[in-house]
Image (cartoon, rainbow, N blue to C red):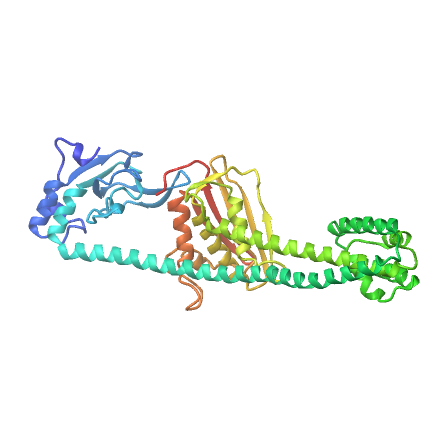
Length: 484
C-alpha cells in the first residue's frame, strides 16, 4: 500500500507535522503543501515498505513502530539498521537530485512491528523542494558531483600508483630472464666456436669413420641426458665431480677440475665417459672428451636460454591476463587465473629471496563465475599489496579458495602480519581512511575493493584479524546477476 494507491488517504495537519524534526522549521505554505500531499500509510508487521532496486517513488518518514533496513549481499538480505525513532526518513532520500542514483531504492525497509509512515511522492516533492530551496538543491548537487569527481580522480591516482608498483616489479622480473638469455647466448657463441675447432682436430684423419660415427652417437646420447638432467644436492654434485675428476686424471686428461662440473651438471657419469673411451681410443680420447664437453655446455646454455625465454613469455601472458587485454569486460572466469596473474605481478616482493613465502590452497573444483575480471584483479592487488606491507618483508601470504555453498565461492587472502586493531577494522572500508604515512596511501584501495565486490558483483568482503593471522574473505555468487 502506498500514497498513490489510496483513494481517501489519511493526512496530518500542519501542527502535527511540525512535531517531526524534518518539518519543524518549514514556512506555513511549505508545511501546508506537505500536509496536502503526504499520505499516512499503515504497514503490518513483516511487510516490506520499500524493496532494494525498485523504482524510488516515495520519500517516507516513520511515524510509529519499528523498521529494519537491509541490503542484499550474495542474494541474502543483511540488516544494516533497526530503529523505532519517530521522524527518521528512508526510501527516495535523494529525491531532489536529477541523477540515476535517485531512480531506485538503495536498500530495503521492512516493518518489524505494525508501522505507520508518512509517504510523500518523490517527483512532486522534488519540484516543491527545488522551488523552496533552490540554493540548497544546487549546493547538494554540487557537493555530490564534487565528491564523485574527487573520488574518481583519487581512485584513478590509486590505480596509477598500484600500476606503477606492479610495472616496476614486472620490469625487474622481465630483466632477470632477459639478462640471463643474453649472457647464455654470448657464452654459446664461444662454445660453438670451440666445438668446431675440436671437431676439426678429431676429424683430421687420425680417427676412423666408424669411430667418428660412434662419437656422434655418443654426442646424441649426451644431449638427451642433458635435457633431462636431474637436480642434485650440493653433496651429491661434489661426490660425482670427484668421481669424474679421478677418471679424467687416470686417463691423463688435463683440466679435470673444469671438465668434471660440466659433465655432472649435464647428468653424465663415469659410465658415459667409458663409452667415449671405447669409441675414440687412447690417441684421440682427450680431443673427443673436450668436444663432447663443448656439446654438453652448448646444450646446457640452450636449455638456459629456453628457460629464460619461457619465463619471459609466462610473464607477458600473466601481464595480459592481469590487464584482461582483448577480453570481454564481463564474462565467466576461473577465479584462480586472476589470482595467479596478480601474484606474478608481485613476484619481486614474494618468494624466498623476498622473505615472504606463498601458500596456495586452491579448490580446483570451483565452477566458473560471472565477473568483471579486470576489476577483481584490482581487488586482489589492493588486498595483497596491503598484506605485503603489513608483513614488512617477512612472513607468509596464504591464498585460499573454496565454496561457501552451492550459490557462492570464496577467495581468502591471509597474512602473518601484526594484525589490524579493532578500531581500525571498523573503518577499514571507509573512503580515504588509511593507516599508512602521508604520501604512502590514499585510503581508497579497500573502499574501491568493497564497491567492486559488493556493488558490481553482488558479493561480500569481510576481514578478521588477530596478531599473526589477518584474513580478507571475498564471497562471490556463482549465478549471474545484473550489476548494480
